[in-house]
Image (cartoon, rainbow, N blue to C red):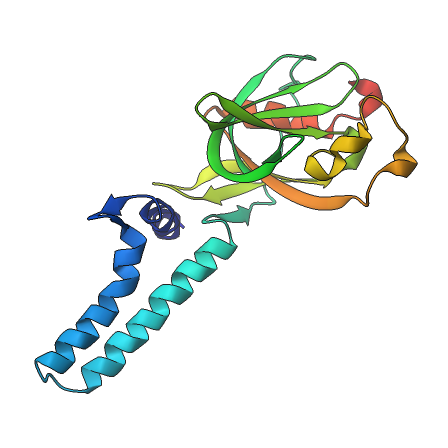
Length: 224
């Protein structure tokens, strides 16, 4: 798992690091084509052309698959259980974490990967995630407790080593497509667009934080 975690991180970073005006990923994709040209120019064995062409295809496939998965992979670990001695945080008490997935504002939404975030639960029961998007800007996710479908423990593969994580699956009622309905303030449930299912991934540096988060996400609304 460690090797895959590092490979995914490298593929992601290579899309943003630049060398001589191009991203590292662009150079890696073009390298086999340059080797094909060099092989033909120097009249090296023609089987090398097939090899470089295969490498060219493989590089595109690897980057394509990594992009489709968001440059991360979640490995569920069903043997993990929350410690009953650790209570959920009090209403409005914040937990620091890192978030991966799609988060929103009223007019836009974006995918983030291991961005710093804060979580809290308001007294009425909704779960709030505030995720740092860019310097000085934030994205959010507001989740009603009855719309949480699954909280799954495991490991997120991205970076130097896998990180302990929670995969949170829920029905979306927050974001650009819901902005005009103001579900949490005015309007009726009958006016809302069809709910969409979404999964986000939450990682933590402290052992107790991911367990306290787990307890909080599973707390029914009437017990908030």
